Image (cartoon, rainbow, N blue to C red):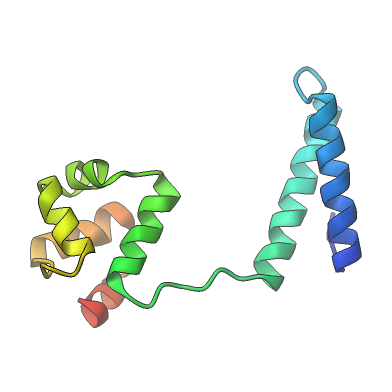
Length: 119
């Protein structure tokens, strides 16, 4: 399924909302159709309404936190630092160390070149 216009997008949203309102549990055909609609909607939105890429390291870290539903404490645990250090980094009061940069790359999959350019 491919959505080619704003009109089709609106129709897909309406159809998806209708399927969800009826209930998906126990209805494999309905679940499959809802999943296909959701993927088609997402693909159309990715193509026509791209989410701007962060231009700062703080912005990239915050995006990754949002994507993974991480709080500052969770990020601190993941990076092996204390929560106050994460807070200082996110508020621009502290620069990242080489070890933290390595962990950002490995744990959050932030591109090393991006880290180097924006640290």
